[in-house]
Length: 254
Ligand SMILES: [Zn+2]
Image 1: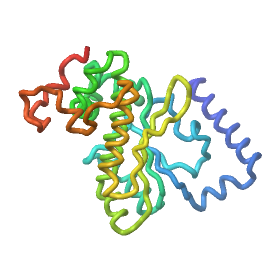
Image 2: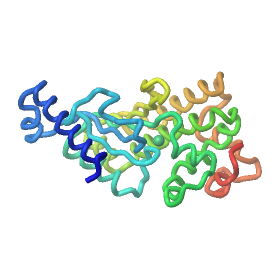
Image 3: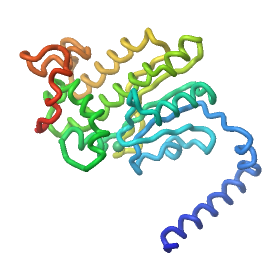
Image 4: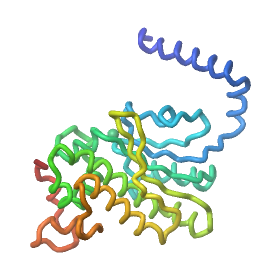
């Protein structure tokens, strides 16, 4: 074993001993049950460690992470995590957490090639395409962080429309979906106010959160703040169905 990896085991032993010294019986209690109230769906980026930045202990946060915090409708991995968290752990909050200067989002925004992961990032390019007009209206240096926030909104909306969350709401189970963004530059979380506790709330929460993003990045409200309004400037010659313009996301952002 390399020296580097041995250091990890040594660190782990120190952490285990310190945790047990601070709270005797900590691990034996955890062994019996986990009762987290929160499901965190965040980016795999090593600079965004879920438990640490909200100061929660093992057992307090159920976590799923992937590149660019995507919740794709057909991703059995994310869907299984959400299903187990909602149906069995009965978490009360599902929090989608993006972060500023996200490498995955940046690659999707700037069309840089990184290999297989580019296929995964098509989900983020879909978000870019949906908000093409708004993003193009921003100075180039703001586009990545704006797309980070828009991606959180879209992934939170996807989460709301999973069968798991829809079924939970239908049977009256209390589950609230949130959209947050983490600032790499200051270590602080911001609430994008995409806060949804039922199917009928999705549209209004999404519209309000989108308006907030528009306000912050443009400095003033847009004339009409909706998904359609954001997508409309794509091209007057294109039909409203953005799937008719799949190549828009391939164009250089600058
Ligand atoms: Zn990231």
